[in-house]
Amino acid sequence: DVVMTQTPVSLSVAIGQPASISCKSSQSLVGTSGKTYLNWLLQRPGQSPKRLIYLVSKLDSGIPDRFSGSGSETDFTLKISRVEADDLGVYYCLQGTHFPWTFGGGTKLELK
Amino acid sequence: EVQLVETGGGLVQPGKSLKLTCATSGFTFSTAWMHWVRQSPEKRLEWIARIKDKSNNYATDYVESVKGRFTISRDDSKSSVYLQMNSLKEEDTATYYCTVGFDYWGQGVMVTVSS
Image (cartoon, rainbow over all chains, first blue to last red; front, side, top):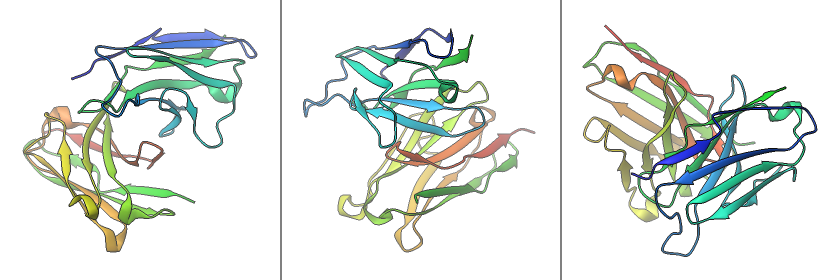
């Protein structure tokens, strides 16, 4: 199975400051179609996960452009340009290229 | 509005069975590929099963840890997907979510396997 490794495990950021989360996969996530099935999800406290980004960098509907995704092959990054209080929670990366789909261990974003 | 509502969780003894239901609305269920994902008490997420649509012969896939014990199924007339869980183990204790495309998720249902 593809192992997804997220760093850091936790992140303390002040409102208005940027944040960055890394996700590394144990093998390339480029599929046979040429697409890279890397997603980012946010789970706010007490809520279900919600997808923010798919195909590395495409924002889901309603997701503010403060969020951005980048990367290729095995190395991916989620960036928040200016953290807001609503961004708190645990961020997970998810690969859908190789069966079975696998998640990263999560990065907890807290307010400083 | 897309809605997914899971029911059927609870406390069950090891070796017993439980069936989860995910009732959906707000999207074209009949053409959707549905998934079950679980979250352990330690908050680790694990994809466990997927069922494709009729045009793909309702093909199913499972993670190795539940293969042979869990069965995913669907009823397009009820816009619902199910997870039949047999021979439950303590390590199956988790919150179980159904999701369509990992875009929309239900609120989750807790399953506790303990004697």
